[in-house]
Length: 184
Image 1 (cartoon, rainbow, N blue to C red):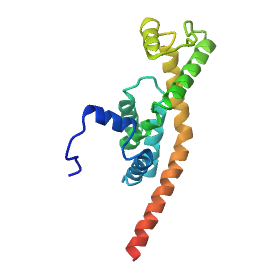
Image 2 (image 1 turned 120 degrees about the horizontal axis):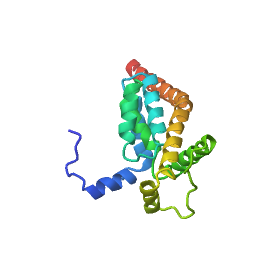
Image 3 (image 1 turned 135 degrees about the horizontal axis):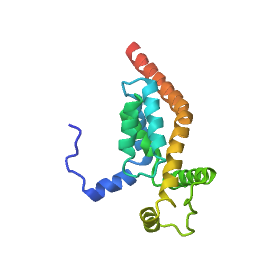
Image 4 (image 1 turned 135 degrees about the vertical axis):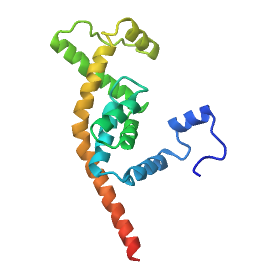
């Protein structure tokens, strides 16, 4: 019923993920409306969003959906909202998230006296980063992993109240609109 008449090619699907043809504003409004209409509790939706946002700090790109879904299921958050929360991590925010994760991890490696956590090279490219992770994981990947998961733990308690209030207000506004329509 809700399928396209003509399926998108892989290239078109990738383009839609990176830059929606409906525009970012409409895509965000659509996502917001989907979250508000979830029949779950405000707590569960807000927790799911917070978990999804937190998981975006981890360096395990490609597993964020899986991590968010599993953590939301374990902590009784909404799995769909957790997956939507992972979109906070995107090509524009990942460099900042990952720099923060690496810096925090390197700080704790130095604090605990763990050898091997080095500085990032001035000219860091994806191929250099992958090579560093494979040949000397303690230099880049392990501090990044530690810092990323520490940021997950720090992010969830700070983002949860914000998401809770936003979802609560949006659900109340939607309830008022529905009530107004029923009274007519």
